[in-house]
Each structure stands twice: as C-alpha cells, then as structure tokens.
Image 1 (cartoon, rainbow, N blue to C red):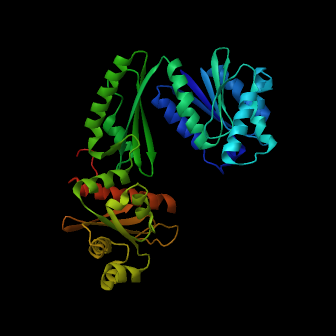
Image 2: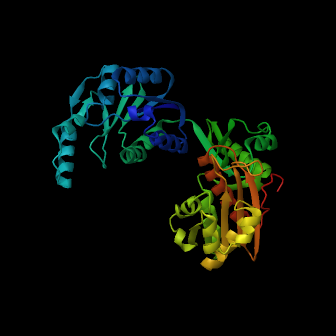
Image 3: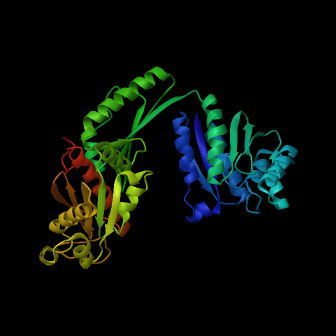
Length: 419
C-alpha cells in the first residue's frame, strides 16, 4: 500500500511552522508496514487543496490529510474535500453534542463557530477525538481511503495511533521491515565505500544514507508480500551491515548519543561534569535533555572568557598565553578542572572558534578541541568542522559526547571503520 500525506496550512509553506505532523505520520506508518510514497504541502486555499487531493487519488492507494479542520475561516480542508469529492456537508448532531459536552466538562463557553466542526461530508465515517473538538474523518472514494485529521499535533497523534494506523494496518497486504544504524565520526562517502553495492541476498531491500550534524544514519527497508522472506532478508542485512560498519555504530533506531552516554555512565556508576567555551552550554543542554540525567550529570561550567577558565577551572594563565584558549593543553585542563572542581570521575570540555569571525590562518573558523578527563588520564582531540556557527557548535557537542562514549567503552578515540 502506497500512501500520500498532504499537510495543509499557510504556516507550513511560509516556513514559520516546521511540519512535525508529516514526520510523525511517516514514522508511525512505516512502523505499521505502510509505505509513504508521496508528501505534499499545500496552503489554505480550497482550489489547491482539491488539486492536491485529486493528484494524490490518481497515484496513491490512500490519502491522509492533516490540518484545516478547525473552526476559523482559514480552515478550509473539510469544505474543499467535500466539494472535490461531490459529497455535500451535513451537520452531525452527535458531533455537535460531543462539542457541547466537552465545553461543559471544561466549564468553558465555546463560540458558535466551533460547531462548524460538526459539518461532515455525506457518507463519511467519524473517528472520535478525545483531545479536541474536530473528529477524524474517513471517506472511501472508489474504495480508496481518504482520511482527514486535525492539524493540532497532540490531537493528530492521538487519532493516528488510535484509529488511523490500526485501520491502515488491517488494509495493507504488504510486509515492510526497517532498521536504522546510527554512526558517528565518519563521512557518508567513507561508509559507502566500505559498504559498496547492496550485497546479493538482499532481495527487496533498499539502503538510505541519512547525514546530519549528528552523524550518518543507515536505514534499511525490506518489503515483500510474505513475512518470512522479508524477516530473513532483514536479519541478513542487519548482520552484514553491522559486520562492515560496526566500529562506528553508536546506536540503533532513534536512540541518541546523549542517551547512550547516560546509560553507560549509569551502568558504570560514574558522574560527569562539562566545561564549555564556544558551545556556550549546548553540551550540558544536550545531556540534560534526557530525563533522569541528574543521576549522572553533576554540573556544567560555561567558561567563555579566558579569565573564567582560570578562575573556575584552574587553567594556568601561562598556558592560555602560550598555546591560546583554543588548544589541546587548554582543552585537557578544562576537562580535568571541571572533573576536579565538581568531584566527579569524568570531565569533558569544548573550546573552539565557531565563527563567523575570530579565525586565523593557523586556527581558522571551525577549529575545535575536545578535552576529556577520565580513568585517571586526560586527552584532547582536534577537529576542523565546516559550516555555519550553528553547525559547528552542534557537531562539536556530538563529537564530545562520542569521545566520552569511546573512552568509557575502551574504544579508540579516533573513529575507524576497521575497528
């Protein structure tokens, strides 16, 4: 089954709102062995919504639309779809009563316009929305499902999990298995060279390289009509891919580097402190994004100035004068100072030039040193990151976390595909 997802809203096309609804739906459908073949974004204009719907029905087996089901004048999806499919809108008294009951429960007076959400295309099936007033709508158009969901993320996600995904899973006859290996420290080209062409025996499989600031994700998708061969190929692909790139794999699925580092620290009974200059606290922020980080994260120092490095981390002023704040000796002493001052076993530091200014011929923008203090020793690695200030800071944090991971797992600090 091939699905097209259509997201509706001027705010999506303007870039003011990130289309997280599509990302959620695509992941949820993939997990249910339903493939997304197309994605369209369209503004709040009836004609364009209708055009997008007709195009989708011409190529997809089912259509999911999200957004434009609210009570305001720019919420046009319901009317546009009804017109496009020749299904006049009728007031559904059960939906009206549901809206009024919700208002009573919340002890709120809802404007009369809210009841426009009870206008439903003739012949549609409704999915109750326990978090809002606009129900999900299912229409079978020439046996092709057209499913309308609200644009409010929490409402859309609940309706998708409770109704949309189970419905499509029952209709889908295609078996799809996926897995993702997350790598760090090597470029996409190096991974491709190591992996080469898809090995024989991977029938029905595809491999996607997904680079980001955090590394390169390798996502394998295997599709077929029967579960047994799909599962067999998936297992073989997983084993062979791990054999080829295992040394640089840090996680699977959606597991993040900060989660992995936290788990290792908890397992070893260790605590961590950070010292940051050019990243300005981003490393500490990433670590504490994980719930329960207080069990292993003690504190973070943001030592942006040279004076703060001396005062808070005991970095000798003479070393800053001799080597510069952006240097291996200073990075090492920042990490050691953070661990010592915080009374913890592991310290990690970042000092660098994030730009856009401040670079020199000897130390251009993107020069970053990561320091590490653990197991009674200190070390530092030098990096040259390309890109914007944002990119340099994000990459610095990811590599710092990976350096902690590698040290604690007794791996070489320099990522290598050959182990």
